[in-house]
Amino acid sequence: MINVTSETGTLKKVLLHRPGLELEQLTPEALESLLFDDIPFLKVAKQEHDTFSKILKENGVEVLYLSKLMAETLEIDDKIKRKFINDFIEESFNTIAHTYKKELTSYLLDFEDVHELVLTLMGGIKANQIEKKERNPLASLLVDSRTVFALDPIPNLYFTRDSFATIGNGVAINHMYSRTRRRETIFGRYIFKYHKDYLNTPIYYTSDLPHKIEGGDILNINEKLLLIGLSQRTSPEAIETLAKNLFNNPTSKIEKIIALDIPSIRAYMHLDTVFTQVDKNKFVIHPNILKSLRLFIIEPSNNRNLKVSEYNHSLKKLLSRELERDDIKLISCGGNDYIASAREQWNDGSNTLCIKEGTAIVYDRNTVTNKILHDYGIKTLEIPSSELSRGRGGPRCMSMPLFRENN
Image (cartoon, rainbow, N blue to C red; front, side, top):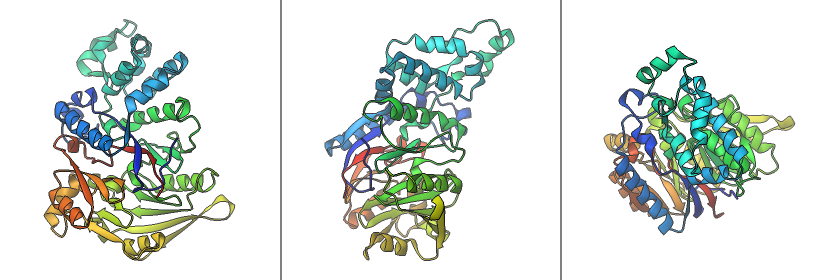
């Protein structure tokens, strides 16, 4: 069962992905296409991620892992496994996967351990791992020298926030911005279609819709209000489609969406890289976005249409109005120091994971922001981040809440 109606309700169940082979399969020439700026050291990245998981568990959070949840889904029926393998190959953008689909399918069906199969698909399959028939002799001669992978690795998987997003008692299965990340959604599609624990979960958006949207842009403020970022990776058309689906679905309680138009650049790729909630009335924000921020209120209108209006006052004033509080605090990432603010935003100082009111998991490297949060009465649980941060995502990016207590 899914239940996420806020950013601050006590977190009880969360989905993670422990970094694996997919990070070791990164190469310098593939970094840009795979959306990485550097190659993390896998051994240390695993240790850091294990610390993250340990802190969650010590604070009463049940941790589920994407690979195990997917393996449980495939174990339900051999037909599901075969269909999943077929869909996974079909959705690959690597021409080798399509040229040698028969051989690749045979290779994957030979796995007896379903969990190992899932980890292998996540990690990538090299072209020389599959037996290539001679029906395409020129391709066979060139493939190993020109193409390393038959199925490319999916290194962004440890950012479980993005490929689907929990909203109330349902989910949005997202259309990812970059082609290299679109295979990530297949895991969510199968889990929410077949896994016994999530069979009847309402679906408010599907990845086959044409407009891009990612989970890092979706913030649950309360059961009736969503904040969504208009960002590099979420389009206005996608927000409108999601809004219509939410407003017109009887399983949804969402009555209003506030769209925050932030700069469409990699440094601010998602709303949660510049703005997250750490308490009922406290938010950490990268101050630079306030200079150009535009705010739009989206509400249902007659005939299943939308009413959209621009709000011409400050974000703080809007939050105060919508939350019916006069004590809203916007806490600046890096404080008033321009250099500290820019550095710590780049290292995900604004990307906090609130696990209960007034308690948030943060990266240890963001010392200035963490001290400011402490001064505002926020308990910070610090995790090491020298390698995890190389993927440009913080604790919120690396976690998908499945159940929070209502507050």
